[in-house]
Length: 368
Image 1 (tube, one colour):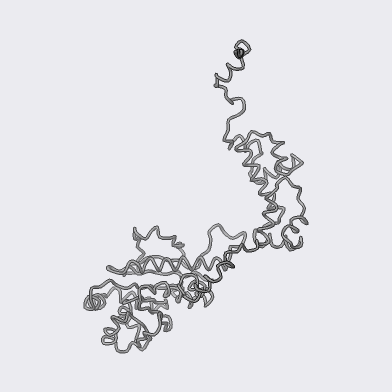
Image 2 (cartoon, helix red, strand yellow):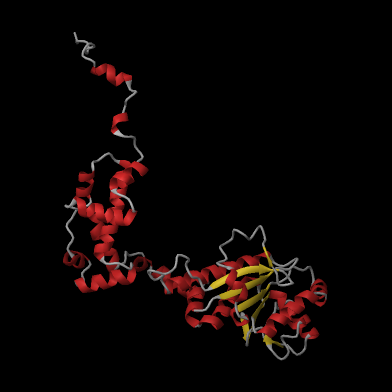
């Protein structure tokens, strides 16, 4: 899927919740997308997320709001600045106003806002307006003979001032081409999800809505199904095989045994490991054995031979070659560099109390 950038327009006096709920919806959609598209082995270190966001001012410049900076990672990099217009969304928030006269004044005098909305629309971007921001879209000329919605409390004002707008109060979100509007601030998440429906299809949008919206019938069924829903599911094939390997690192490796633990054939377990973890069961076992060896080298004073045996190897030289390949140093070099404990020669060297007890000239007093 191509990346999409959401530009959250920040206006003086706008509803701050519109920013936060937009970010919530974008981050949530990325989560649902990643569940449907698990990261493949060997992908670059940076996890790809299709939906990115930033906050802009009425001139279209990126701004940073201190109270929003830590809300969530924007997943935005320099290349996102130059995405094609059709891969961008301008989200216009509603305004906090005292009455209809305040709203009309803000909209009629918002020349910079109008210019930005017009320019983005003409470039091919998607425009999404929330609550009373429909007024900005109408003032910018985007809603001529277009369907749109607005807060029912202000819908009369919209009809009086912009008679060519096809007002539709029957739907939570109204979509007409690449223009989307919602009349309720509480529907801002739904607005973002409907934008994503346009960009990525029904599956992702429906998943996000089903997971985050209260639907009485769904909750009622879930309550009735609690005993079933709370039952422990069967473990996955790879999970069971990993659990078998990790349970006894000293056990000799046999692919048939691993497959049997997961109730599949050796060929199937090999294929599943490569698809999910990007390595064979043997490579996975070697990796966790090396991790165990590193831990023992760091925190214990066991000699190398004992560590080799505890990690399931019978050949010291083979183990040392594998260890060096993974860590770029020998086990002894690794211990000298990372060991948390001092060398044995220093153990209790300054403990004079212990030393005195061992001196032959100071025997323990006899009990009478």
